[in-house]
Length: 117
Image 1 (cartoon, rainbow, N blue to C red):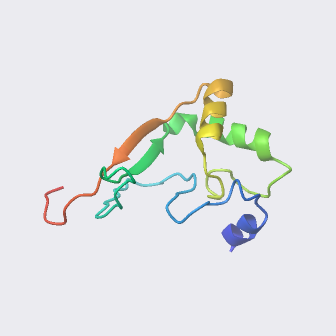
Image 2 (image 1 turned 90 degrees about the vertical axis):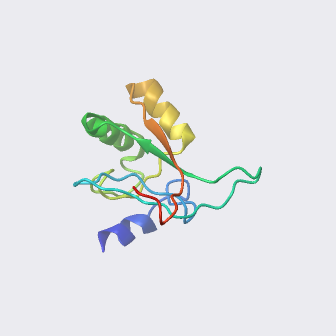
């Protein structure tokens, strides 16, 4: 599919660097993510997932940012829906400094399967 074709043309810094990272995407319906397990951190503290969430109204600005930065270098149709970009700390900082777009960081910890949601 297009996703595979697009991923094949990406520099390694844009590809998913590990199985535990989620590429930039936009849910088109309400969604819930339930995490049942996370490996402990090296310091023994509980592990968690880190989510950087953006306002829906920032989507066009994020697209503009990625097109300006990677247009002509990377093949993609839509920089969000193609799911080929991972916004690491450097890209998030640049997005904030140049465009004023900031994420809302959420730390998600596992829940016990018997716990009420």
